[in-house]
Length: 190
Image (cartoon, rainbow, N blue to C red):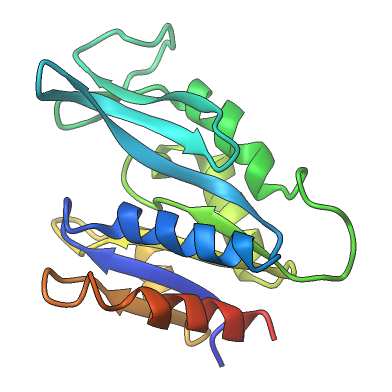
C-alpha cells in the first residue's frame, strides 16, 4: 500500500498547478497540510529564476539567473541559475520538520514541490525528506523530475520505493487526474 504520492513529468507540464489544486482540496476537507511549492519568477516575460512559496504564503528565493546572487562562498548552479541555498533551507526545512503541525497522532500531508537538482544541493533537505519517507506519520505529496542526464540519487530512491505511488503527468491526462491524485493521498492517510 502506498504511503506517499509523487507526480513526475517534463518541465512546464503542470505538476505544480496540479499539486496546488490537490493541496486546496485536501486542506478544505480538514486534512492537516503544510509544505511548499516552487514558482517561476519572470521579468519582462523572461524567466529569471524560481521562488519557494509556502502554503501559508511566505516566499523566498530558490534561484536567480546570473552569478554571485547569494553571498555564499560556494556557488550552487543549475544551468544559468544560481541557487540560494540559505534562503531555500530557511524557508523549506522548518516545514519538513513538522514544526507547523501539532503533535497529535493524526497523519498529516506535506507538500514538497519539488525534489529536484536545485533542492538536492541541501544535504539537510535530503535527510529531512528521507526521514519523512521512512515513516514519520506524514504523507508526502511531492513532485520529482523525469530522469534526464545523470540520475539524482534521492529521486531514483523515491521512484523505486514500493510504498510510493508515482503519477506520470502528461498533456493528455493533466486535466483529468486531479481526483485520482487526491484519492491516492487520502488512501495514504488511512
